[in-house]
Amino acid sequence: MRKLHQLFAPATNPAGKSRHTAIFAAMENLQQQIAAYQDEINAFHTADAEALEAFRIKFLGTKGIVKGLMTEMKNIAPDERKAFGQTMNSFKQLAEEKYEQLKSSATAGTLQPAGEDYTLPGEAITVGTRHPLTLVRQQITEIFKRIGFAVAEGPEIEDDWHNFGALNLPEDHPARDMQDTFYISTNPAIMLRTHTSNVQIRAMEKGKLPIRLIMPGRVYRNETISARAHCFFHQVEGLYVAERVSFADLKQTLYFFVKEMFGQDVKIRFRPSYFPFTEPSAEMDISCLICGGKGCNVCKYTGWVEILGCGMVHPNVLSNCGIDPEKYTGFAFGMGIERIAMLKYQVKDLRLFSENDIRFLRQFTGAV
Ligand code: PHE
Image (cartoon, rainbow, N blue to C red; front, side, top):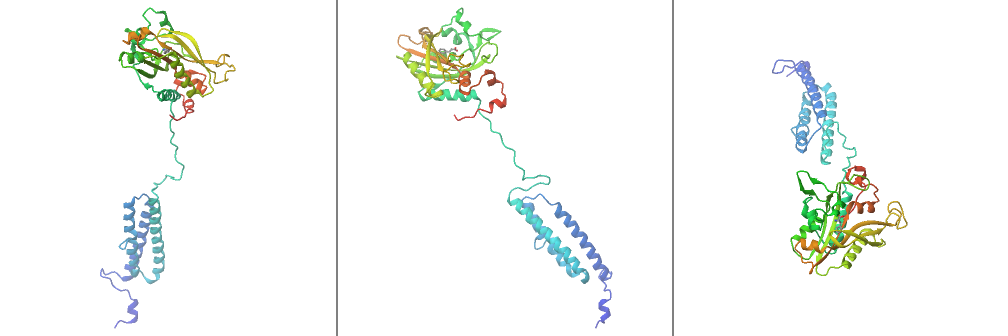
């Protein structure tokens, strides 16, 4: 039987050290280990679901570090147990809190790397708008599509025949002066088209009748750039060729267009004019949208603004394209998209359309 004092006598462990020394060493070791684990937990901040589960198993699992350290309690000297218990409790709490915190940010799908603040408002994505000329072109073509016109396009670099010759403008015809032209220096028979009438010729040459087409596109003229003129601009031309097409059809078609485009109250007038490719020819004015016809600087105090040229297709043009002018008649018209856009949006300077100033372009939004 052991004597009482032997109970408190240093016991000898297998390594031959006294039991007190072993316990002291274990306690110190544990404190160091816990401190290292605490550092590890504090530094742990990125976790996908997998890493988070690994964290849970490592620290909080049934065979995890927290449980493992708890079992060391029995090896701690009784008077040290309270302190160890407190250390362990706060260590466990640290691991648990860290786990909960990571779990809730993972569930929200916003695991946040250090140094990022995901609560800051996001950057707005700016959505572009259509160019005003695109909006107007689409609106014009939509209106004509509703009354049976199809859309056709053609080349911007054109030969003399399709831009001038077939349109009843022979080489020495003075009317060519109406349209200052850019020629290709190495081949003066090739030019930048001065109007989209070349598409009319190409459509008629195909010989399939009736033709009911609307032709939008870019055109070029050797003009000095100013608020009212540019070396390139855009047109929409229309062509209707069939049997018994009359000037009344032309007028009615354009009435419909203007009312759809500018509203039912707009007034229209036709003035006799001259184009080599139409006979008779006319220009069409609408009552000024700015002053309502009272007179202002936009309409030069006349109350009217010109918006297009038109007429009955000249018989020479029909026969140039192989269409019998005795059997068929047609009307044609042409308008500048910039002119329509300027009136619609009250833009005073044509150059704004091609300068790409974002502050200008941003103002145009619209359906179509
Ligand atoms: N092509 C003419 C121009 O550019 C417009 C127009 C087309 C006039 C059709 C009459 C008929 O000026």
